[in-house]
Length: 139
Ligand code: HEC
Image (cartoon, rainbow, N blue to C red; front, side):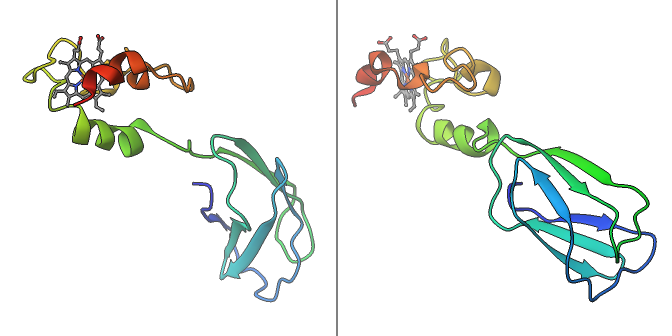
């Protein structure tokens, strides 16, 4: 998630009036926080970057029962994924023919593995949108 909430649970209730929190996110991004019982809720003020490794550091400070700094590392989600973004498009427009029971049964587009014959992850020059092929699909 790029705008999710990180919940940190402590072994005792936190000060509900905690006003300031020294928390650092790297690469730098502003973080807002809230206290709910024994949980500290942290949320980026603005959405984070996709596919990025972040480190969150909270140092011991007044009002927080921390003996030493804690560091959390996480990686944000990719902007696009096959399952969520690409597969529905292919199923709506392509898989009717490009599947074992379709007209184009030798050039499959019905699975991630099959699609990799035409796409290199991360490379915007996908063969799927190469004019060489799209022209043959004019109708
Ligand atoms: C109505 C059937 C049909 C649909 C729908 C269809 N195709 Fe095709 N596709 C074909 C046929 C037939 C060929 C072979 C054309 C040729 O070789 O002249 C082909 C060839 C291709 C090729 C070249 C494959 C190779 O390895 O030679 C690609 C890539 C391709 N299609 C992508 C797509 C994509 C992406 C979609 C959806 C946006 C799609 N096709 C939808 C029938 C279809």
